[in-house]
Length: 221
Ligand SMILES: *Cc1c(COP(=O)(O)O)cnc(C)c1O
Image (cartoon, rainbow, N blue to C red; front, side, top):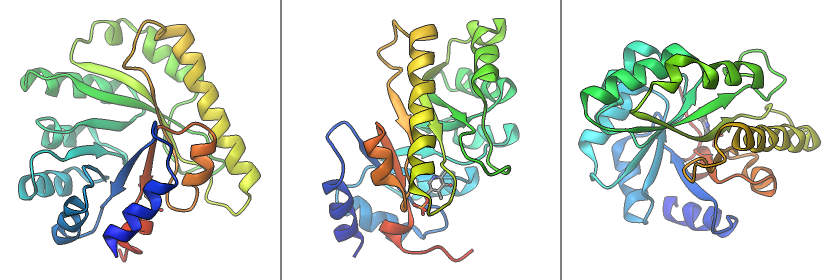
């Protein structure tokens, strides 16, 4: 089933959009099955769970951290994480920089934006992102690379609202590209779209969709 699901979702994706298999809460056997079907990008939202799965699974997997990240957990993923999608404060980015230095690597990051109407979802607004990008602390960083933006739409059946929220995130991406990253080839990712809304996200220009339950089945917490 996992292989079929991955094939089916990939058929919906244009060549510039990559699939992240969101494997949080799922056992390594299921991730291995996805790996055997050719999947290489995996998304997790808990640092220790990601570290343990990284240890257990093939080393050519790209690990994408997609959940809220506490500064005291960055150290567990800093040695290997491929991209952190959830940068929502300067202190968090400073911690990623510090941990990346320890491992002599550069860690790719996305700025997470609050685009949904729900109160509870984490993320910056455009002004907060400008403050971060204009800070002396950010400008001094040598071991993090900001590669784009990430956001989650409202969990709703109102597909017009979801379209508008993803379009807003695309607009934020274009604004930041123009004002801060016009010379950066690396700044090119728009991480948006989950199981129920990835097709809309693709229509609005997503480059990374994060799909969990449509690949691995519903999660029981
Ligand atoms: C869990 C999660 C997903 C995947 O959700 P599904 O609805 O299972 O596809 C995507 N993005 C984030 C940030 C998540 O936490």
